[in-house]
Image (tube, rainbow, N blue to C red; front, side, top):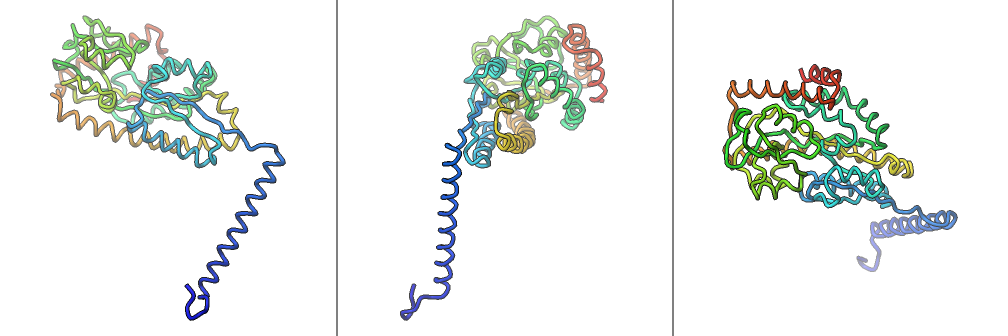
Amino acid sequence: MPQNGRVNQSDQVGRGARRQLLVQLILGLACMAIVVGASGTARAENVLKIGTLAPERSPWGQVLNVWKRAVKERSGGELKLRFYWNGTQGDEASMIDKIRSGQLHAAAVTSAGLGKIHKPILVLQVPGLFSSWAQLDAARSKLRDEFTSAALSATGLRIAGWGDVGRVRMFSKGFAVTGPESIRGHKPFVGRENDITRSLFQSIGGITPAISSVPEVLPGLTSNRIDVVAAPALAAEQLQWSSRLDHMIGDSSTMVIGAMVMSDSAITALPADQQTVLRETGAVATQELTRRIRAEDEAAYQRLRRKMAVHALTDAEKAEWRRVFEDVRKRLVQQGVFSSTLMDRVVKLGG
């Protein structure tokens, strides 16, 4: 404000700086208009369509939405990610098919989707191999490049980043799972193309599994068509399966893996700068998903422990499960799901 009829010197300096900034902005916009006018039009907006089974408000959804905003901001709005949540694009097998047909450009998948791309990747989920995240990380690091290049050459799909879903625990409805024989006569959920879980229950014997897709599990638990589910605590909680379950085993001997898979042709069709934005922001998102999901899965397990009857395996029961796991590995090799060479390598990596 003027004081005694004179303009304050700092006000003059401030106004001068603002005038200079305004001039620079106008000149910048004018230059932009000249460039756009010379080239005809600005670059078209690119939108990548990505499917996932995850709910938007889940921990996965929260991190993916941050990635979505980062891509938009870093690209100046020229590249956008559009997510389809809650399996609205079908189960993971359907999403992989849609990527191949061009209906989707990418999908955040678990092992169910990875098996459709390159089945040997699923050897990392064979039960009894890894008892810690550190062991899994070490084995996956050794095999990462081999799996990634094989998936790309076989299907044209790029593994853009690896992730995890959580530690697998056995949940049940109306009874306690203890040793392997306690499941006989019951109805465990098995994914339609899940050779590992199918082999597990074949090894136990006396079981007729409920073959279903992930979206069918909750109705199956409600109708009692399913009464056993092997899943991470976080997945059981987020998919609402835990609302129909009342018993769990506290021990875990398997981790569910996952990845972001993308159409290689869709990615290479993007301008180079947008590919860089996608790659760099995707790497950060993958790292954050790994950190957060592992922590969230452990927190979900602790919550469910307070709601369910938890069984701690005895030494004798652990020995029974180890025998079953050994038989599962033999079956998977005999059935041609994994080569004996790959199985031996992963067994050694698991220690």
